[in-house]
Image (cartoon, rainbow, N blue to C red; front, side, top):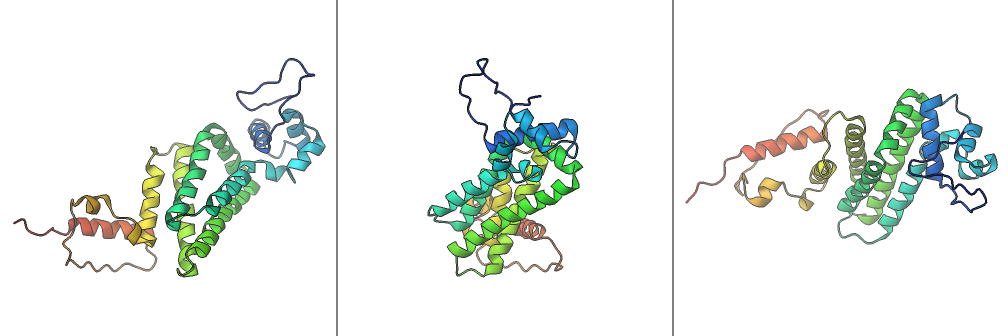
Length: 251
């Protein structure tokens, strides 16, 4: 049995050298097997046979069957790490751009990502691993911010990283499960809202930047919310209030 990645095929001449399958190639084959046979019913031998690799090769690439399904995350973590080593004028923006890089990579692989989502939702142990992966991104973002902007309180960096990760995951779920229209700018707009909430000097609402609906310079808005109010709700309520403040009278 052989379940190759879509668009690939074995050459007719078995003696011709073949390109070794990458970890992600093998993982994609495994994900399709998990959907067809069930996660528990699929063994490492089944995966190795379907991928056309030996069992020893499989275990050189992966520690266990549990590691296979999220193999692309390892590559993305390495990509983010390399991105953060470059200088960035705005570290807050760099974090949101890194999250967008991850999102776009998943969008490029949307078919297999949707299959994986189905498998994960049906398998409790994989749901736990997925949660761990989300925490991994969150920690990378927070660690970068704490090093890049050391004057900012550590808890602020941690909260920002958590908000970026949660926003990314929320929009990604909408894309994967087709519960709403997710356009090319949807994630960017939501992450801009996160930046405005945590680092307001770096972003201005479109209406204020363009002069439309801008409040007078002497306007003061006092907002009181219950402590349990989600930060996104607070930001949206404040923005709506600012938009409603009358501008200065025309001359």
